Every structure is written in structure tokens, then in C-alpha cells.
Amino acid sequence: MHLTKEEETKIQDFMKVYKNYLNPYGNEEINTIIDYVIDSLIKVYIEYKNVVPFVSVVDDSYGYYILKPIDGRYSLLDYLINTVIQNLDSIELIDDKMSCNYNMLKKKMYINKKSIMSLHHSVFDTMKSKIDKDKYLELYYKNAIYHEIGHMIHYKVNSIKEHTVYVPSDYLSLSEFPPLKKRMSLNAKNAELDRRKSIVKARAKERIKKRISMYMALSNKYNVLNPNEIDDCNFEVEKPNMKYEEIMLPPIFYLNPVEEAFTECDAQVYSGMFENAIFEIEDSGNLDCFYLPIDNEHILMTYSPSSYSFSSSIGFALKGCISKLSYFRTMFLGKTDLFLEFLGEYELSPVSLLSHRLISADKGQINEVQPLLDDIINFYKNKGKSLQNLNIYFPLIFKDNKWVYYTEAINKMPPEVLKLQLKTIKDDTKH
Image (cartoon, rainbow, N blue to C red; front, top):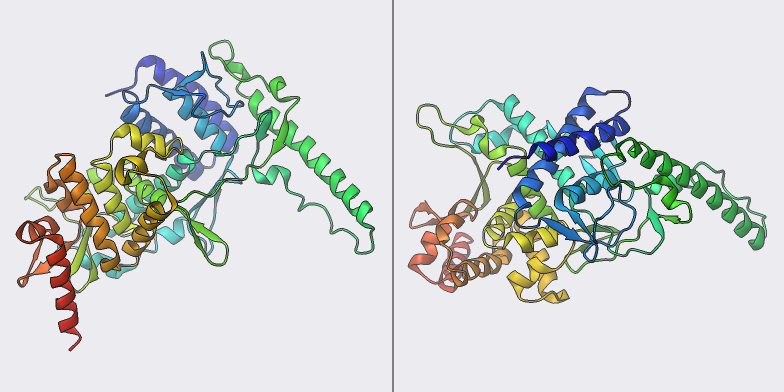
């Protein structure tokens, strides 16, 4: 499936302005990252255009996107263009201890190439054949960027106020002002804080109007937002509501394991991880991969040995059986459809348990993960889907002195017996 000429033109029109805004000085590395953003937008659009041709304002009521809705809805392409323009305000190349990251409140992507390119050499020893490490690391870096782009495209404000324009948090930062004097009265302190907030809000308004006005050159072709339409608006940084799938990790870090798993599996697809000749074994046409040990009885097959290798494999398995509509509505619109389809409900207990099991997967705690794998198998069976597709996603199991596919093992015995046998093997190895 390809873009029409009209679709190509619209993307080029908006992304030219977008690239000039994000990279006014023409940094080559940032240009490459923006090209990846545009490529992700196109690939998402092509994958879902027949399933989700339009997005209704009922599903996203934010009223200040660059491309305005027509008859209460956006075409999918317009919606995705709006999303990347709204959700990415800056890109920063960093070289410190922090890895790549997308900050949803700052609308900023931090990219650390050095961190990604330092993948430990021992990981390559898990492959059956030798591959070009330098070429692979370039691909691994590209995959890491697509992962952060995925977070950026997925992000949605989930508590929208009317007549409110949401701006990056830096726009309203008070950090430039000196500390308040200690001996000020409470009334004086409040008055000074109000004065400072008024100043940064006025600046934010001018800054966002300037950004919107860059697209006004396209108003003769497209229905774009006029900067004057935000004159009477409030300017705020959104305050996202906690979702059931988000897990609080002390002291203040929140992790969404479902988002991480699916974002990583999509990043591997969109970055070209699976289509790369790096993994081809010469002459045979077969593909090699990393064989990462989970424990003594389980090995994970993956092309991307990241911190989300196991949970993303589970994500692939689930995505193979979830409807595309449910997947899109949950990952790109923030709705509950995926959970309703897989779990039958969207309640704290089952959704939180799913998230905790995905965390356990990435920690290598197979006993905690096994019930989820069995639930997926039953989900496939109920949908009448072949279990064979799960072989490339689920771990290999060491059984009868050989490594076998997970589904081969359960075809010979029920999952409960398999769990018991694995526990027995583990107990025996302790003596």
C-alpha cells in the first residue's frame, strides 16, 4: 500500500515547516531524527488508514491542533500530522548518563547516541553466527529513536479543559526568576508569583502564536488554525491522569509497561529491524538472532536485546491476535479497547496485574510471567488462531535434554503440568 500523490504533497507541505521549526540551524543528526519521525508517521498511516480512516472529535476533543477538523472529524492523516506537531517541540542531542527519552510535558526528545552504541560485547556472543557489530549498532540506535518517536506519537492529553491551549512545560517555567525574598509577606509573595506567571503566560502565548503562524502559508490549501483563534485562551501544561496500567516505582517514577512493550515491538517493525540483511546467514537464506538466557530452562529469541526484549515479544504475540481497531484506539487515542478485548474488562486489578507481569518478564521472572503466556495461548485458541505464530515470540524451553518451542511443550502436556515440571526441574537443581 502506498501514499497517493495528494497525501504525499500534504505530508511534504506540513513537514517542511515542521523540520524548519525543529531544526532551524540544519543539524544533520537532528534532520535524520526528524526524517525518522516523518517515516513513522507515514508507516502508522499506511498500516491503519483502512481500519481508522477518520478520528472523531468525540475521541479527541482538543480544539487547537494545526489542522482543524471538518464536520466533527479529522482524516487519519490530518490527525497524525496534528499529533507530531503538537507533541514534539524540540530535539536535544545529549552525551551524559541519561539514555534516550521522550518528555511528554516538555514535548522534548532527548537522544543519546553514545549510550545506545555502548551495547555490551557479550550480547553478541548469544548469536549462532557472527554479524557486523558496527552495522548492527547503527540499526539498534535507529530502533531506539523509533521507540521514543512511538512514545511521542502515542501521547494524548487525557483531561482536556475548554478554551485551553496546552504548551510545553518550559514555556511556563519560572526558573529564570530569582528566589523570592525570605522576609516578604504572604500577600507580597502571592502578588509576585502572580506577576511572574503573568509574564511567562504572555510569552507562551506569543511563542505558540508564532509557531502556529508558520503554517499560515498553507491556509490557501488546507483548513489550518489561525493564531488569532487562541487570543482568548488559557495557556497551561497538562496534568495527565494516572491510568490503571501505570505502575508507581518509588520514589516518584511512573512506568507504563503496556506502553513500553507495544512501543518497542512497533519500533522494531518501523525501524526495519526485521528486514535487515545483517541477520541473514550467508548461503542459507536463514535468519539469525540473539538468544538471551532468561534462566536455566528458558531462552528468549530477539533481534533487539533491549531492556524490554521479553515484554515486547509478549507485545508482538498479543498484537497478533488483537484487532487493529482496538490496538489503534488504545495506543494512539488512549482508549481502553485493547484491554476490553484481551481481559474482558478495564479495571484496576486485572490491568495492573498485566503490567506487573510485563515488568516480571523484563526482570526474567518466568514463574510470574507464565500465567500471562498461558492466557495468551487461550486467547489465541478462543479466536481460532494458530499457535504456531507464538513460537517466535515465546521463550524456548529446555525439555528432555533439548530446546523446544513453548507451544511444542504444551502440546504434549497441559500448561499446569508444564509449570509443575519446570518447578520440579528448578527444585532439583538446588540440591
